[in-house]
Image (cartoon, rainbow, N blue to C red):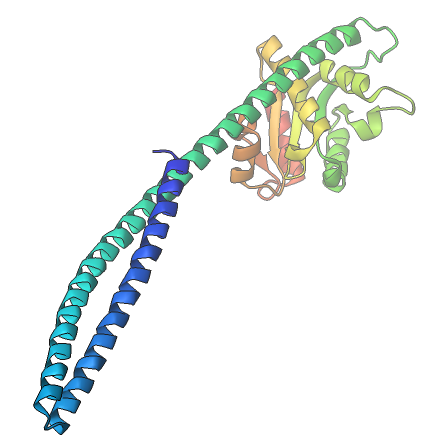
Length: 280
């Protein structure tokens, strides 16, 4: 049965229960009235010495006793029906709750599927756009021919840490592409990023809570993944920065299964040394 069917049944049961309770109250009132009349007439008989009056009172007692028995029978029947209806109502409410939960789950799943489908389409469009722009970058003589050892992808909120990281890599003799130092005044941000991605050997991805929420970091990550896929060699170097595994699992499954260094466990010098070992 559907949620609507259970809701309609609940409405019907509530109406029937209300009717039965009203009837039960009326019969209980009738019982009280008959018992009062019987008691009153019995008291009158005890005080009276008139035979005619006593017979009249006895007939009244007999009549009220029949009414009393009849009302008590109705009370028993109504109580039984009321108990069954209330049980039916309880059972129906349990089924209604389950049916509501099932429909909610279906709706949530439909929304999730729709969201994932839209996200998939958006990713596909971004991948196609990245490929086109990469092609334009390679064929555009106005863009720098400089090659880089590392492309650093990060969220602006993590700039202070990345400043230190960039300095350490520069001091170790590595060339770094980073938006803060590589995008000039008036340059196209997108073309500059694509130029850096195309001409970098590795992409160091500083993954933080802020990183996995932003558009430009997602664009850079897609570009790194695209280049890694097209070249067939490892390019992504994940670096976790004040982020939990659950956050990465939920927001960026493509990164969660890759071995990563962690800024809470690895010093900047250890990260630089790890990169040196990678390219030796």
